[in-house]
Image (cartoon, rainbow, N blue to C red):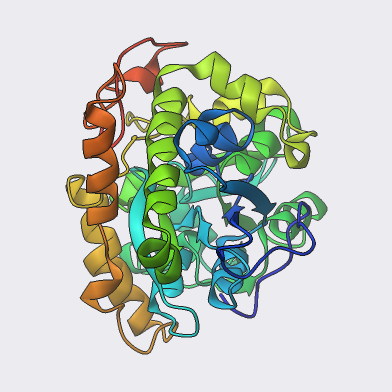
Length: 368
């Protein structure tokens, strides 16, 4: 994960390493190409954070193509918080250069956000087992890598793995250099529906392999700028509510992101709200921020994910227990209870299956 990091297109120059008493601009890392964590885009392109940040604090947003990039920036003090996939989040809180802790989830799914296997549209591959002996593109150390290893084990097959980023994977599929590739939304949806280049073969739902997003924060931000840390999480809770219950507003805000200028609205909608058309009857995205209340993704972030990364040699040891700090979110939600008309401790319900639901709430728990 460290060696595959590449700089994002929206990098901001001169970002501070940590907030000081004189300069309280906090730099947030985010992945515009990871639809599960689009509440970060909702925050970036709305006035939601300004409602909750203490006086004198502001946010700058720094994009990245991969979560590993954000993790690297946090480790050298260039980002104070980040929205990323499950595996990069865990490597971020395991490093010691700039101590950071997991404060929340950036939603999760039953394998339909990150664990996606696609092939060229005219490929003879119809089932997952058909990739046996083929060259498959995957970003090692990511959730897609974890999924590939699980399905290879389940199918008792071998492939040649080509370790590269998602843009190169899709380009190689287009050029016929690889037989299959794994990636995450919305880039896969764009390739399938907008560009008409690939098609879905399977997702993690077929093998009961879930994926999730994580939100690490530096311990400096958590301990020395507690009110700002809570303000960011209050904004996160409201933005997640918007993501879950206000689909058209979400797509309006996401469409303002320069890095997504080549994605049409239909691709963006497929990437977060519509299930892949391959017969897996599961909800595309589940909305949750609290990894203590959301049992399955919580177990992924605290148990199964760390074990996987340790086995693969990406971590020397799992993150220590004190690198999980759900109490910051608890404090933020408790303060919001008396300040907003919606419930920060409820979820968006089944909002993801509606076109533009107005159901109340979403945030600390998980949707049914």
